Structure formats: structure tokens, C-alpha cells
Length: 99
Image 1: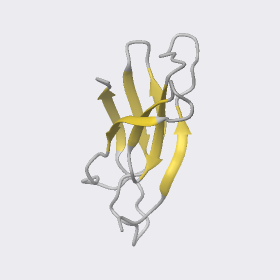
Image 2: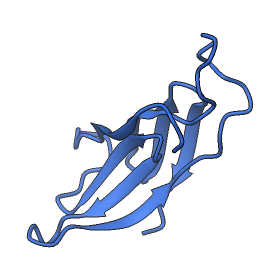
Image 3: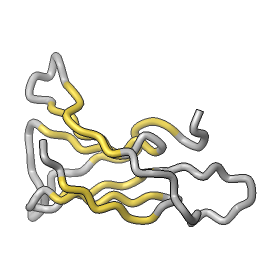
Image 4: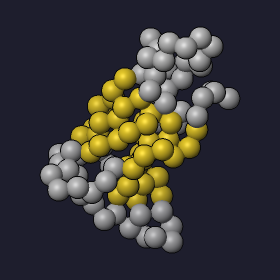
């Protein structure tokens, strides 16, 4: 087990000026990184991409005994499709989604 939190935490929201899609969802999954899902068929959604960053070299959380794992927490996708994801332990990841 990696430790820390696992599971969905945040979704990119379709806001004016950002990436807008009725078929793609971008989500953070804490210690499982950032995930992309195709929901064009609502009866059979599928994962189309994922990035699980390496464990952080330096922890942002300085409390003793904390596991050295990623904690992807927030996600934003700009109009060009560049993904920005913040991490409680590792800082900021900038990701290009290629589909």
C-alpha cells in the first residue's frame, strides 16, 4: 500500500475560458494521480489517460511520520488542454493530455 489518501477528490469544471467537453472528465485521485475519462457512452465510461507522478523529493507537509506519497488534490484544464494539478505533498504538475 502506498499510504495516505486514495480515491476521487476533485473534477475539472467546464467554465467559460477553460477546456469544455461533454465527453471528457478530468479528475484527481489523490495517491493515484490525475485521471481522464471518456463518458461519451454513459453506460460504459472508460479511462483514457492517467498520470501518477513520482513520490515527492521534498514534502510540503512537514508533520513527522507522513508517508512520502503524492496527494493530487485539485485539477484545472485550460482552453488549450493543458492540465494543472496541485498536490498536497508535491506541489504543482503541468500535464499535456494527448488523448
